[in-house]
Length: 345
Image 1: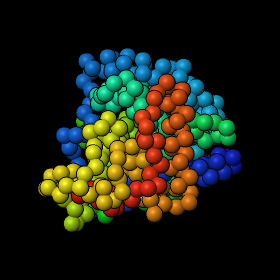
Image 2: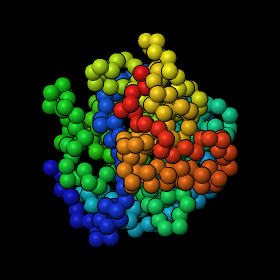
Image 3: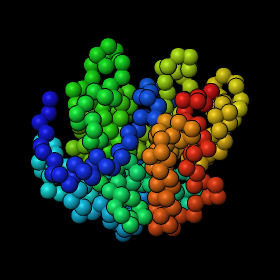
Image 4: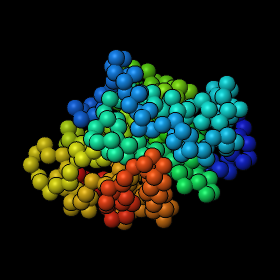
């Protein structure tokens, strides 16, 4: 077991009031698999070119304006953990959510914000940051952007590190004692996601056996959230085909590489989405991918519906700050969609 420091009273109140959702919570923790449509790592030679292009899409001054609500925010610290001693007095914006750390993490995956025209590329960054704001933002009163760049780990799971361990833990493979609760900007969760991310990063099982690297190393943690953004989700649940994604990637939805259809031909990846009320590629589909079981359609909780609309509101504000035109119909809050337990095929 790890030794935890005592949280300040104010931090505890804010952290528990803040709803920090986890990637995969809406789907109950699915197995993942490599696929040709997933993001690929940029080569060393591509990294600097990618960084320069991303700096033009998201200038540092714009990023600073969007994240102002988390900067110098006394609640956005990690003084609760023994392994954060070096950073316990620093807001997370000063060592984890720095501009250069984000640019590096985005550049690491070659497809992120690199497809389509300039507006589409900016829109992808804005959509990503809007979800970061809801997942881990400070959400200060009067902040239209939601204060992305605040928290880096899920509070409730400290008390139950194994809450996101699948049945495979201890059977198919041995899971880390630290657990696979949400870490990073989008709160990467579940052992299967940590395992697939580590493999796709070319790190073998390193991040799977030491999941806390996603919180102590911002490059890895931020890269994990962007990895999930570009990752199609698979499942081993019978009777679903483990070789066909049961969720598309957020990236493919945003750039137009995902289209709902009623086709039933084997191998068609989105055959039943129209029947599940997922009729257009929009921001609501992305919300549905991230936390649809709680925030979308008839199964949504009252709080979940508010959170889904928060994401839409943050998108509008961040897009405006970045000079992004949001396409007509894109700002959907997924209230009219069934979640992905109504399968895509």
